[in-house]
Image (cartoon, rainbow, N blue to C red):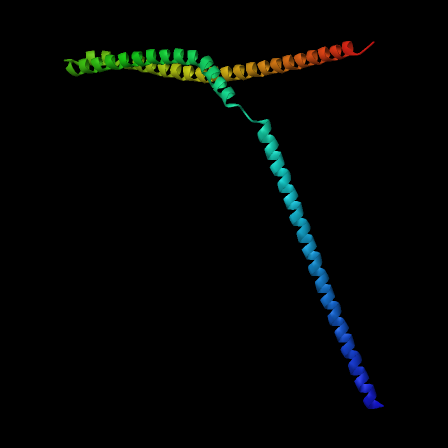
Length: 198
């Protein structure tokens, strides 16, 4: 009886071990299947998101598509608005440059006179004019900076005015198109009503 009982305990232990191994293997397979399902769901979500982004990009590209002819017209209009101001500023800058050149020549003449003067009194008198000329140069530089700033502001204003005008023109054109479409529809409806037998 003792010998029979021993093999029975051994076989039961082996059965339990085998059952445990099977349970572990099944759990491992289940975990692997769950992981694969999660990965597939994640990939599907990423593909969906990528497709949505691509669709949005396509829509945005269609919305903001600008005609090359419109760009040329905008450029020509902007140049037409800014060109007179730029020409005027260029002329003013040219005048300032000429004035600066005259001052430089005058300073050079004074310098030559100082070198040939026999006494220091005359030298001192000539040198007393230098601060005056320096002040004039500083004033001219300030004027040039002021002109440059005004040109920048004029260009910005011209660009804003032009953009606003284009928007207004586009709005008027759209309204006119909508009115024409509404009138056409009303004429068609009236014509249909006249054709119907009374």
